[in-house]
Amino acid sequence: MKLDPRVTPLRDGIAARALEGIVAAEVYLDPKPHACGVPAIGIHAVPSPEAEQMDQLLFGEAFDVLEEEANGWVWGQARRDGYVGFVRAEALRPPGSAPTHRIAALRTYAFEGPSIRTRATGPYSLNSLVSVEAEEGRLGKVRGAGWMTLQHLAPIGAFETDPAAVAERHLGTPYLWGGRESLGLDCSGLVQQALLACGRACPRDTDQQEALGEPIGRQAFGRGDLAFWKGHVAIGLDAGRIVHANGHHMMVAVEPLDEAIARIAAEGHGAPTSFRRLPPL
Image 1 (tube, one colour):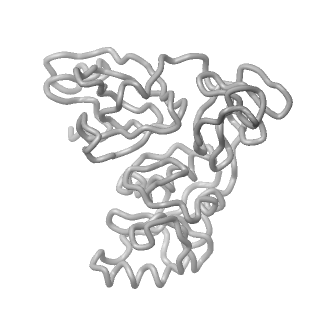
Image 2 (cartoon, helix red, strand yellow):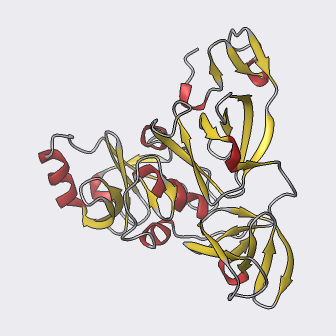
Image 3 (cartoon, rainbow, N blue to C red):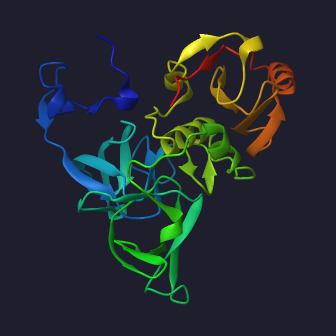
């Protein structure tokens, strides 16, 4: 059985307890649940800030720690998309009460007190998971962060219905390799965030996302459909336009689909590998 190392907690003879009897390891470890306690933090390939950022944790997302490193890093697995890697230990906190809301605005701030005139921290990004402990006027007290605008939060289970509209709200956001936050994200991060906001689970990387839905022809492409190239993905706004985070514009941009196909081919990255349609929400 071939296991994907991106989502398989196995390294150097160490594996998660759930893999016992599935893969050979010298030691099987029980995961210690934690949650992201900062607006966003990178998941890295190796325990170094200079290492490749493969993914990000957003505030409130669960991260299961398997091993603590001597240099202030931990190794484990993100529970929301299964990605495995290294995270700075100080960015994590013990798990608390279950989240009551998710951030539904593109980004928002947390205030030190129940007033927008108090010191602000953040910003916190779309789809971050929060637990509201109290309310005062228009603000809610979020465990581990501060007071957030209730208008920017949605109860757990209340989702949007148009992934393309969610993606379009990110227009102008800078391109960031491995990013998922509203301050910077990559192509698959944009797709993942758009689908999560609509209540649909979504893997992290483009090749994983290309297994979603069903294949369609170019002539059937429309709003909410996904266009794939090798290492790239975009969301359809209509039959002729896509929105995508891309390294050409170095930001989230809207582009005519046929122009993107020609440009990407001219840059040496080939033709689209597929067009896919997701099941109705």
